[in-house]
Image (cartoon, rainbow, N blue to C red; front, side, top):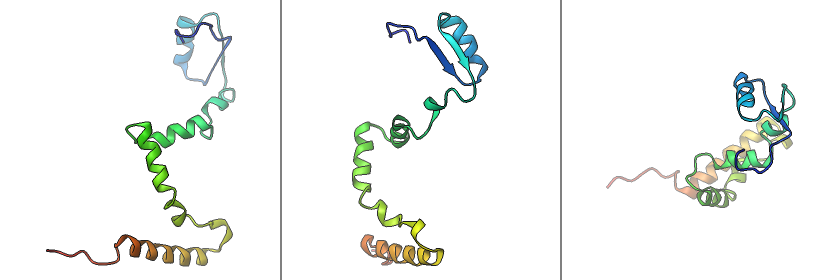
Length: 115
C-alpha cells in the first residue's frame, strides 16, 4: 500500500479482529467495512487470478507451471470421461478400458524385468 500514490477510499475485509487494529494504525483516512459478504469478490476461489495461483502451487517457476499443463493436457482427458453423460456401470466399464490402454501404452502391464 505504501508504493501506491493514492490511499484507497474504502477498505473491505472479513471479520478478523486484527484488521481493525491495522486499519487504525496504517490507513486512518480510509473507511473500514468489515462484513461477512462484502469481501466475496476478492475471496472467490473461482476468479482467474486465484485459479492461476492454485495452478502455480507446487511449481518452482512460472515456466515450470506452464510446461506441465502443456504436456498434461493431452493425457488428462483420457482419465476424465464425460461422467454426467453415462450411468455408473458404463463409467466403470469405460474407466477399466481406459486404464488398460494406459497400462499398455506406458508399459505398466508387463512385469518388471530383473537383470
